[in-house]
Image: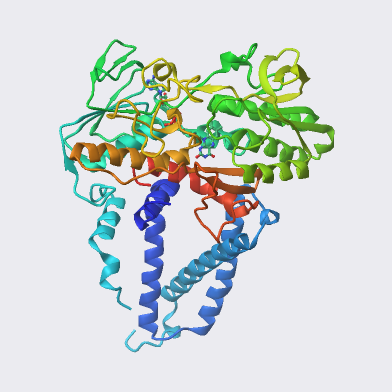
Length: 121
Length: 437
Ligand SMILES: Cc1cc2nc3c(=O)[nH]c(=O)nc-3n(C[C@H](O)[C@H](O)[C@H](O)COP(=O)(O)OP(=O)(O)OC[C@H]3O[C@@H](n4cnc5c(N)ncnc54)[C@H](O)[C@@H]3O)c2cc1C
């Protein structure tokens, strides 16, 4: 493909998602920033919170794959070759990571003082 | 970790800014726009005409760019198959032409009636004469339903008569007829014309989809599906044709060769095919009519049409196959379905043809030679059932030219290819109309 550049991808995603691209992008940035804030504040990973986030991440990954099947009127039996499995795994990982990051950050932001170790908070 | 400075160069920043609507779109070549007072006229605001207008706006400053097309609704034709399979409604393929036209382009909502390439002007049906320095002909093609005796487009959707090509509403009506057939069974006829045609895979896909819907309803055993090929092959690219032969055998779709639809009696549900043995009548319960396709009359009856050779009879425009520049009128380019070149009648071809033609046009203004060449790239996601497709991409020489070699196998039925067709194709097409893909 010619003109195979990043901005072409952005243009295609913009056409795909319409106005929703900006809220979605904002959400991704906000979740990443929130995670950064929470990590900086806590200066460590809070194990129970991480576990809960990971469990939610699993559900998020499954939901992402299920959504792809639903949106495209297909089902797992349509997967025909290794690249299809890689795609499904990719969607699962993206959905899972996104959910886990968001879940950890949100839980961290709403955490009670007792769970936070940073001095002065 | 800090990004290496080269990652964030001026170009990607500009591009990102343009994507955010903060800056004008970057010229496709990455250079500053060329200042010129050239008058550039484009006939047809379909896939090729809109994409060409958008690219010219990006690359030129001061040019007078005019589009002529009466059609206000833009039709995303690759989506018609999905509409006719009941997966999308008619609205999926419709949008407004004006949504893709830059403020720097003048749209004349009229039909081009006469092209005078000697006097360098075009006259519209409304009687307006538009002079040009450069002309881009992007009229698409004419669906010649009238050439099939007895065919009545108004009856599509009734009495088992379908035709995916006729338009959005007709594709939806074809779905109703096909769905009805899938409930009851009987004989389903599929075919293609003997002329050049856009998306030669579409008639084949529709037979696959009908087979799939019948199976999903548990009625495959009640139906016989017959595909009528116009010649001895199923597809013009031999390796693809062989693969399709195997898949049709696997799905139990019978193939008749050298059968060309000549007449139809929609009331009695009888289709008459021209064969080497004479006319043959075949009864049907459902039929997907694909009409003969020719260049629109404005091109067919103009000096732009081929005068001799295989493209002359249907009036396709005589262009150089590598540059899409007219063979006798160097300031004229013909892109998209109307171009008289082997292969290349898909939206995917348009995506590759338009930048080449535009670069040659601009090079002429600048007085330089353009090295850009179109290699015949044509692509067709061959749907083999709902949820699976084969990514078939080829060039003038019948070579497979996969976009993702080693990643997406071209002749394999894959889910990822279906996802590309279902999710990726329309946004890429729309981005192309805006000159951004
Ligand atoms: C059922 C179907 C399935 C398809 N599937 C695929 C696919 O999967 N992948 C793919 O890449 N392609 C596919 N295509 C093909 C693709 O849609 C066409 O190749 C593409 O639209 C060609 O673009 P164009 O600009 O040449 O013609 P069009 O998009 O048809 O535009 C032509 C324009 O010219 C205008 N016009 C005509 N005559 C005049 C005149 N005299 N004056 C002014 N204006 C005029 C028309 O109103 C129209 O707006 C499919 C097509 C069909 C019908």
